[in-house]
Length: 466
Ligand code: SF4
Ligand code: SF4
Image (cartoon, rainbow, N blue to C red):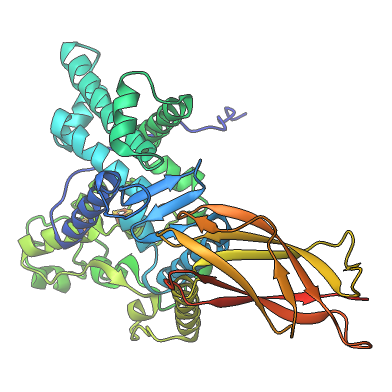
């Protein structure tokens, strides 16, 4: 009887080797840009006549998000829905054309793991040194190197978490309060949770987040087609008829190898050693592959050394590997592209055309109308006004479309609202409707400001007299 097999296989630690090349440079460039933006933005000041002087500030108590000159209020939530739809469509579009480039170059997990691996390499050395260190028994050297690595990881994780906190208030004030123990509890809790999750995800779990936790790897194949660019090993060129072989005697020159039926892969293993998820791309497309293309750089380095053409591992499509030509213009991509442009256009239009005030008019229905002693009919309305500009405005309210009607705002003499401020006004409209005329009758409230800083605009309502 065979031994029962354990259901859980312990993780085999991966110690990726470093590599130089164009895709590594591209990844480093994107990483530096992403870190610069993330860490600098909360400290960037922005000149506003009113409101905070922080360029990007998510002000939860004030219910306003400041993003440079744009102020986003809770009622603009549909912009968020638009952005989420845009992000999803962009992901589908890019994945259909370029495979998992998001995973390989832009995902937070990839970017932060890259930095953690950089720290690890600086402290513990290149791959052979790290492998040796992980296998050797505990001694002073191991304690010192692993201890320093983990301490620096925690420092990066804390810097990441603390910077996140700075987006939710005035950065210099939060910093001073945080380190003197005067910040709100939410700041310490958020920083603590994010420090722990960053440390675990980028330092300890690493590729396991991509392979076991992230759902994207599982459904990516749905978005792939024959023309999707994926990191692929050219099986035909690499294996020849007789398979891959090390460049031993008589197999060092390409011509000799071809004569012997041997492919261009010299089985050096460099592509496997640099892989952050620890897979062998020569085994074909695998869900663990995040398309970072580091194995492309590795193999190109080897091909350059051999003096053979690059591209044994390259971005390629299934169609190209079968001898065809990759088609970038395909129905699916064009459809996604058009949908993306439509959403971008709609969002831009909505942002640029947003009225200077958010106005809600509710007709009071208890009672719907009152007949006055002089025979006129009175309706009441609650008008909610929110100044969504970046300057104080003195609003004026008028009516249009109700011939001879009177508007009464009661004791309200002036409606002066600072940026972001809101107010609800009770308005009474009195009218002498012609006998037998339509009820309800449509009319508009006209909103303007005394200084003429905004274009007057109308918001529709109705007058009831029956
Ligand atoms: S196989 Fe290549 S592209 Fe895929 S994750 Fe590994 S190194 Fe990156
Ligand atoms: S780096 Fe290139 S030559 Fe070396 S094992 Fe990988 S595919 Fe073969």
